[in-house]
Amino acid sequence: MLRRFLSLLMMAVLATAVFAPSVFAGDNQDLQFKAGFYERLRHEFWKNNQDMNSQYYGGGDRNFFRFKTSIWGQADYQEALSFYAKLTNEIKSYNLLGSSGRKMYYSDHRHWDPDEIIFDNLYLDIKKSSAVPVSFRLGRQDLLGLYGENFLICDGTPGDGSRTFYFNALKSSWDIDDKNTLDFLYINNPRDDIWLPVINEDKTPVALNVTAEEGYVLYLKNRSIKDLAFEPYYMFKREDDDYGSYYQSQTGKINTLGVFSKYITAPWTFHAQIADQFGKYGSEDRTALGGYLFADYDLKDALWKPQLSGGYVYLSGDKQGTAKREGWNPLWCRFPIYSELYAQSFQYESGNSYWTNLQMYRLGVTVKPTDKAKFNLSYSFLRANELVTGVSSNYNFSGTGKDRGQLILAKLDYTFNKSVCAYLLGEYFIPNTGNRGFYTKDADPAIFVRTQLEFKF
Image (cartoon, rainbow, N blue to C red; front, side, top):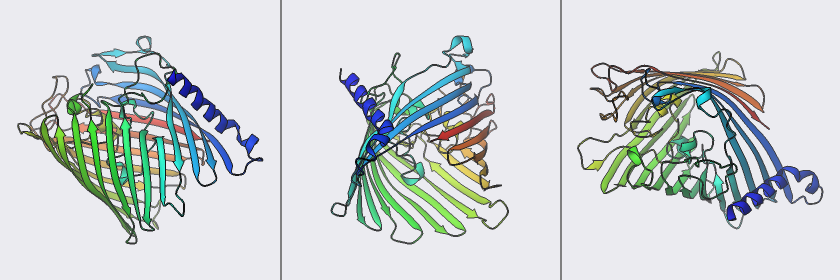
């Protein structure tokens, strides 16, 4: 009964946000409305990127289309309050879906399944004033891109892929002075959606997370020095063991202390982050270390305005035979932060997009042939810090060494106008199968290809 009531209420609020501007704009200038529409069209092809095995289709080989549709509405009252709601649906059509050790084609899988309509965002903003320099955002909200280049906070719902990224959260931002802002977040992300109605939920609910998750974050943004961002933080996350698997099969309590920094001294830009983790994994103590360092060099006066980039990523791995858990926990970054292809390659090692046990050396170049086009090409060499015992003979890790392999990534972005953009992404991974190889001799190269067209109105 409650779910039905909330569903009708939220639909009414959204309908009001969409249709009310013409009704209210002339009568009440304090109350403003706006609304919009979003459509994302994708085609994706996956080959071997979960199991590095050309002959085994349980590893998730896929060839499919996916269409994400969203409508949103926003109501603003003066400069004090704002309410935002967004509904989202994503349908998929599979031409190939590897599952249970066999190929599944059109006749085996639901085609153009309408799937669920869900509340992607639903939050209330209480804005700061001259008397109270604190703003609040309460409800379902996105945090992608807001904290430390997405290293630890970006996707609150990794289980549904890129359908949604939201967090059920309370966020407050305190402007200490004109150079310092302190954010506090409380996060509560269940395994599947129990907080808001799901429309057309006629099957098993979509698993948004491996387990139920809860967290607290204190994050300081400091701009006291010109061209330098300095952002220290503390994060606590609890992961339940219900439905848990791989590196989330036990209750987890993770404390993370770290700092992000970005310094611009043209033509150079330096990005760095380092974080220490401690806590519990079941009854075992946890200790881990993660971070990165990247440098960009801009040639803005040269043809096509190239940017050269290089960097290093380190995420500690779990040492076999010790009484502690040393593997890095990515917190809320179970997300393709470095690679769409290789995020999937953790599926049978630590969990889907569970970035850990990694060293990555990356070189890249980005050019802009026109004002509307951007092309990026990068090469990465990947290593493991620790050996991993494979969970099945079908998954081709670990070999006798720690060299994971080589990753080549190319991406072409094109912006037609402010409402329409597109990109083509291709990734190719060559697993190392030699004496120093992380993978066995049977491992095969992996491929990921995506074409995307995006409309925003």
